[in-house]
Amino acid sequence: MDLIETTRRFVADVLEDEPSTHDMSHIERVENMCIRIHEKEGGDLKVIRLAALLHDVGIVREHEEGGDHAEYSAEIAREFLKKNKAGSELTDHVAACILTHRFSRGMKAETIEARILQDADRIDALGAVGIFRSLVSMGALRALKQTIGTVKETSMNAYKENPFDGFCDYMERKPFRIPERLNTETAKKIAEKRLQIMRLYLEELKEEAFLI
Image (cartoon, rainbow, N blue to C red):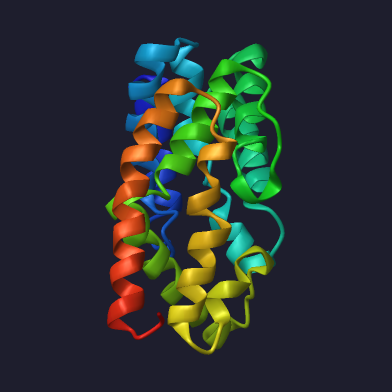
């Protein structure tokens, strides 16, 4: 089995019971979007795919301990790739991509591979799937707070008493700010189409919920 598929199986096992939207379906959508962007923008496809597969593998640890899943994911990626005899240059590059992927950290991606991972991960927060993920994530975060007391400091809107207010606040703080943080022209074109769907949905939600 090649390294890509070995990595896929490893990540699927780690995220098998992941309750939030950083699950295996998200991982594979990000991988597919990375491939799509790579077709136009270039870069090392092996680095890009490995980084996409491993970029959220530390989320389970974040749920349990708090902290930053990007840092945990980079650490786990290093250990996994070393164990599977990946070269040091490949390992370092993949870990560097993972460290800078997270939207809330606002870190600059230094390579085309890291920029593509950032863009693909952010695009998955947009459009119909972005709306679906945000609502599922809010429910999961509220449940984790109630069951094990975990509070995600970067997602405080999820805990608002009125979930409509929390959702609207989330939309303003993340999806509608994503275009200004995208790196590639390919990603910007994809994002604009998806944002049109989100704007229409939010307008309709506000009208139906008597928020306007």
